Length: 176
Image 1: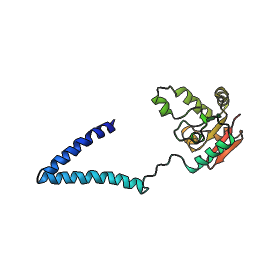
Image 2: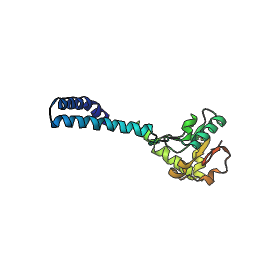
Image 3: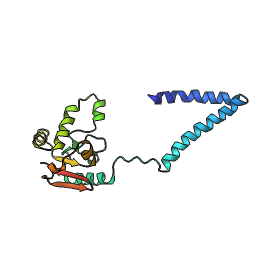
Image 4: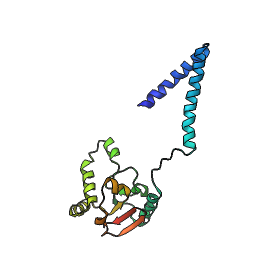
């Protein structure tokens, strides 16, 4: 919403600064000050980005390594269980997920809560997890720091399955 205000106000601010510049005395000083502040504000933002002070990392090295392993060792249409987040290693592999980012699903009006509850129950392990994995036809399960933190993944439950890809704290278990 704010971008529309910003785009609409640019011509008005330019007109106001140009008008003040044509005046005398304090108005001219104010116009010059506004021009310098507005220019330096943008320059500061560009400098912070160009100098590397802003480091936004979506995927870490281990996620990229395990995604490469997933691509090599799984079928292109394989179904994965992973935490419903925007930056899962499964996304990098191009494989299907039982559930992706809930914020995206919600923005499209999709009722994701029942499936999200099922994902959490599977990660908790136990008999219900076995039933739900069969219900959804889960072929692979990803356990990473995200699943450990947000889903409270019980990795001991999944250790009975073979590991097909591993990198650091990331492990992919083959269920079927």
